[in-house]
Image (cartoon, rainbow, N blue to C red; front, top):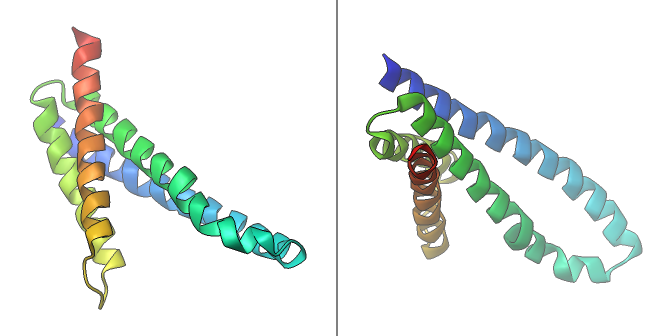
Length: 129
């Protein structure tokens, strides 16, 4: 029962916090777009925000989700983190790839998300000892 609870709570944390971050991004994007009308140079740098802010925050959420999963599982923490990573990456891919193809960037992001989740579990193991 503890294993199921760990996987469910870890997955729900990542999905819910990820959705809240996307909601915050929408609000920021709307404000940024209206600001870019007055300052056109902002249109040139808007792409960098996704890479400099959005992706590290996403990996941080995956890391924390792995840590929570490992903390709840107690045993075989990395296996539980691996399951959570596959579930959440699968959900992310399913929603993003509707009638689209997987790109190299998508594969790299998925592998880094998997690594971040496992790193959270590994960090929890290191904290315990």
